[in-house]
Length: 179
Ligand SMILES: [Cu+2]
Image (tube, rainbow, N blue to C red; front, side):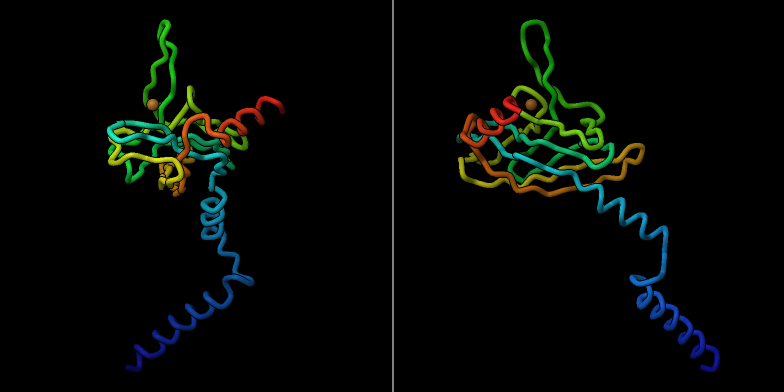
C-alpha cells in the first residue's frame, strides 16, 4: 500500500492536470492537429437529391454538388435502400453513352465544386429494395479519402427524392447557366 498509493495519486494528478488544462493551455500538438484535420475534412454538399423510382425499377441515381476543403476523393457510397451503390462516370463509346464505376474514386480538388448530375458523374443505386416515391427521403453515406491516406472519412446525408426535371432541379440548372 505504501507503494501503490503514491503511484495512484500521481496517475490521478496527471489525469486531472491533463483534463483541466487541455482546453486552456496545454498545446497537445499532435492530438489537436489530428482532430482539426478530421473536422476540416467535411465536404460541403449542395443540391443533393435522389431520382424517383417506380415499383419494379432496379436502379436510380443520386446527384449533388460536392466541394472538398482539401484535395479528396469520393471513393464510395452506401444506402439501405439499394443492394449496390457505386460512384459512376459517363463515357462516350462510339455513338452511345455508357456508364461505369469510377476507378480509384472521383477526384475532388480543394475548393472546387464537382457536380454529380444526370448525364455526368452520379451515384448509382442498384438492386433497389423498394420504390422511391417523390417526397421521400433516402439516407446515403458517402466515403472519402484524403490522398495519400486511405483512411475513410464518412458523411451521412438525407436526400430528398424528386422526379427528374422537377422545379428545384431545373432552378439549379438554370441558375448555373445564367451566372
Ligand atoms: Cu450509373
